[in-house]
Image 1 (cartoon, rainbow, N blue to C red):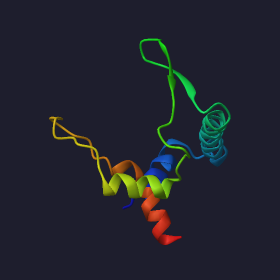
Image 2: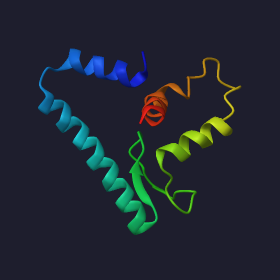
Image 3: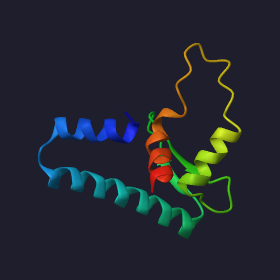
Length: 104
């Protein structure tokens, strides 16, 4: 079962109200849209750390990348996790996107 199908199955367990699911997804998109527009306008965003400190984050790329480009990059040059005792699976969170792109 793909990550996307698994995610959909979980949503079915969590809620039978499709309007709640759609509203949840719309809010995710709105949040991302706000972040992208802020970066495009100001060339940075301000985020609050867990400790409550405000920090300026400046993207290290001239242009924000799309999902496909990001996936290609992490597959091509994954970060070094040798120092971690239990490294997370870096690829699991985006496997649904690969499934979608391959089957579109």
